[in-house]
Image (cartoon, rainbow, N blue to C red; front, side, top):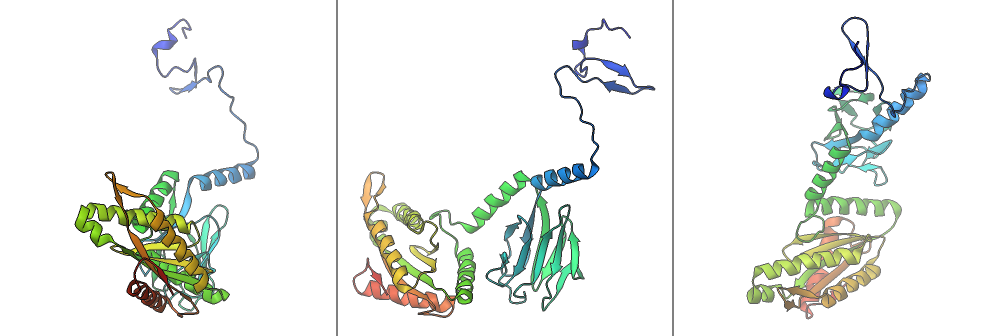
Length: 326
């Protein structure tokens, strides 16, 4: 071998070559690079590789059918699926048992176990009591079909953004009605199980028609969207809210009875009436009427709860608008 050759002329030359016997060529570690570590503890290596693999790929259960269709449920560890409001993953399907199945993190695998459900469980189209899951496997609980996936960090970020686009109203930044309705049903069932309350606000903006007629509908849309963000800021983790339609909003407040929910309604009323609404240098002055009710004092289910708050909203409108009414 001629060591006098120009080593820089070959982009694959890593600082020297040695004959490997036959036609193969082994590369020599360049100066400054860390030496290869000799692996001796096979069990420890397996554990480290499993941890690295799990850090890179996290499980997601995608709801393929049923009333929760479209949900993408990121799994961080062993979780229980069921209708129990305290379950890790709450499914609204009445064919799902209170505590139906458990997805277990077994270190180097994920397995799903039936917890003695009424309607059983199917995995890959076959009834079973327990099964180790692989990417793409389907699991059926009641009338709800789920698909097991393993997603890397980029895919997880994509899933989160997709879920945000599905669940959030672009104009107001609040929940869309479908998402709100599902979450409200869960809040009511949780309150029923725990003996607590859920406050409910039905809200309708005042003055939007005048703004639309005077300045155009783009100004009205701006005010509606801005009000949604004001409501979201006032709630600040205390509850959930939704743009119900047009210039109407609804909110659910877990743990609050009618009196306490009315106090939050007054906060929203004050925030809307003092917020600086400006578009193209033009000041705008909307108001908001709020009706208040709560579970279980005024209603025993989400539909009746909305109806009671809506009737209170009607009283606010009839008594002069831009006020809070019980």
